[in-house]
Each structure stands twice: as structure tokens, then as C-alpha cells.
Length: 234
Image (cartoon, rainbow, N blue to C red; front, side, top):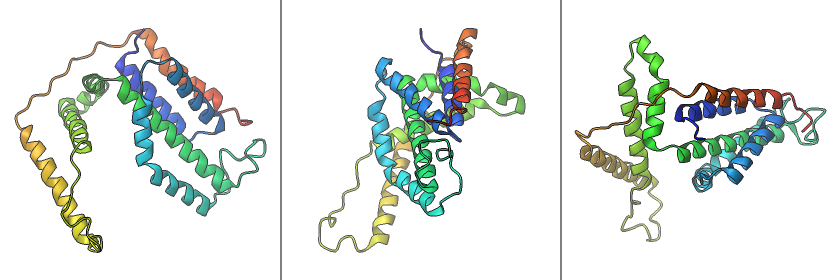
């Protein structure tokens, strides 16, 4: 049984929406879902996820510091009937927000690993069909998406800028010139990639509508989080 690419994207959107204001029960449900995916799914999404989480480590730390500093009065993880009630409200809120973002990063990694680029673009093209009634051209939107995804992949693999004076003592003092030089280097690299793709054609296959029974996956996921949201004793 293969899940339709459109259903995969809708399940991803339902998952992210439910985690935007998740409590402890919903966070625990998300963790269980990914544990099951890791154990039974043939898709290897953890290496990509670990790389993304490593790049976002300072972002997560800044969120945790901000929540601790602001110390909100209430937290979805710290209520009188929760085992997390002994944790200060700011710490509990920060940990809950960071954990929900970690689960979202895992969801993004799984979605990108489970779908090929052509399948992802074709699914978004199918979902963008209502935009035609508003007078918008979904072909242009999908084309820009394809070009953007390809550009991100190229920029991620681009060679690192190496300066001749980088290893000399005191080379890092002129911070402004280093930043402007790096920006100019990356801009020229992106401009060169754009010139290489001039006149290139992008093609993708149009998807058939998903089977009716597959719409039960996003509905079941939504009701699962709705039920887990009532669990406050975790």
C-alpha cells in the first residue's frame, strides 16, 4: 500500500497544524508516531533530520532562553495535574516549544525523503487547483517552486569560500570586509548557476486524484491529535 503524494502533504500539514499549539499529550503522540515510522518505515529520514537539527541548534537554544527569560504564567506542559508541574513555567514552555519544532523538523525530513522532487511538485500543483478560480496561474507558482528547490540544493553543495589570508594572525579582525566578500562570492555563484539554467524546460507528471479511502489518513491523524489534546496527565 502506497500513500498518495497529495495525502502525504495533507497529513504533513495536519501534523504541523496540530503541533503549533500542542500540549504534552499531543507531543507524546507525535513522538510515538515517529518512533513507529522509524521502526517500520523503509524510508531513511534520520540522517537528513539530524543535519537539519544540527544547523538549528542555536535557534532552539535562543527560543529556550527567551521563554525562560519571559517566564509566562501558564504553560501547556505545566499544570496542576501534570507530572511536569514541578518545572518552572518558562522552562516548561520553552521545552515544549523546542520539542514541537523538533517534531516538525522530523516531519519535514520524512516528507522530503519519502517523495521525489517531481512527485512533490506534482502534488503541490494538484493542491493548487483552486487558485485557478482566483485567476492565478499555478504553473508559474510550481515553476518557481521547482527552481527554488533546485537552487537550494545547489547552494548547499557549493564549495566553501577560502581566503588566502584566512589562517594569518589577525585575519578575522576586519569582520565587515569578510561578510561583504562572502556575500559577493555567494551572489556570483548563484548568478552563474542561473545563467546555466537559462532556457531549461521543467516537466512533471500530473497526478490522478487520490483514492477515496486514503482521505481517512489525514482525518484519522487529526482525530488522534484531537483525542491526545485531552490528555493532560502525561
